Length: 191
Image (cartoon, rainbow, N blue to C red; front, top):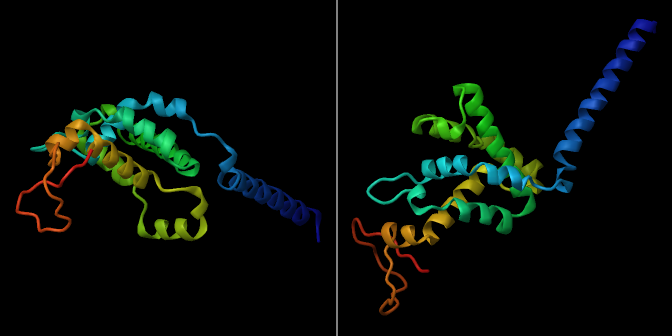
């Protein structure tokens, strides 16, 4: 073997080792990192914009009408597992970068269609979901899954969501556990 081939192989081996170490330290040693809740609190407007994309205002109030951002942040910080917290915050960063690169502005400054496209870009494909489930099952739920869950819980437990979007009866009558809903009937809320 000549020196040139030896040094080429050595440089390739060292470079491959550095790249592998970087991947392992980011993905598998990440559970030791604390989530960046300061960044999450700074992104209130972005969270409000994403919540409005998930539950927009129609003939019923939207997510922003219910004022659910504080509840969303509380659910992510206090009720979400640590790996899912990290993935949620990283997903929020990715959406911000996507809007900045594609539209040249922040998420909250984009129009509704651009916000919807940015959120669609964050939804994992079927292949990605399968790989995550098999290979990275210890890294928590995806950003989009956590966002849907947090927005839905926050909206349905808010006063506006429970009383105006859902049917709410302060003093219900007899319990009917299973019945067919009538056309255009709202789902029931229990607070």
